[in-house]
Amino acid sequence: MEIAPGTRVTLHFALRLEEGTEIDSTFGKSAAEFSPGDGNFLPGFEAVLMGLKAGDRERFQLPPEQAFGPGDADNLRMLPLKQFGADITPEPGLMVSFQTPEGELPGVIRSVEGELVIVDFNHPLAGRTIVFDVEILDVQPA
Figure 1 (tube, rainbow, N blue to C red):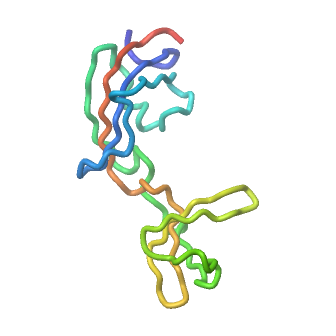
Figure 2 (figure 1 turned 180 degrees about the horizontal axis):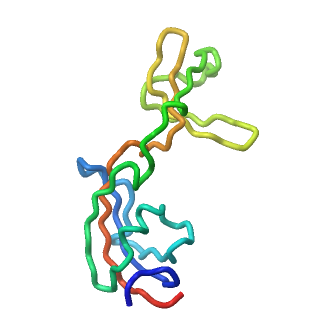
Figure 3 (figure 1 turned 120 degrees about the vertical axis):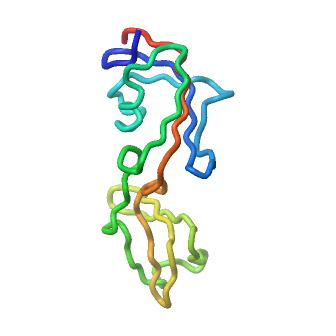
């Protein structure tokens, strides 16, 4: 049976950056399960799995548009340095959580320019090409 809407899929997967840094993997751990459209995988990841069947092993290179998005310049914010408490020393690469009325919002500090801190609120993998390795273990009707 091939992966299609209305199926339940058991698989191993690994997500890596182009240079090989592993982001996540189920290989050597419990397999993952999903049904197309259930929200467990991004649509771009699901799209490349359609038509695969048990026993298939594939590697896909997904551009940002199919993975975590290209990133949006509107998600970069300039915040005053004084907004950061004495317990935080803003420096590039530091992930900081901000409280909003909607809940917690993580941001990554991109730069500190005088009294301004540039914070990126895009997904940390936005703009990155992702290598997606999969091994399909089982495909059944949902």
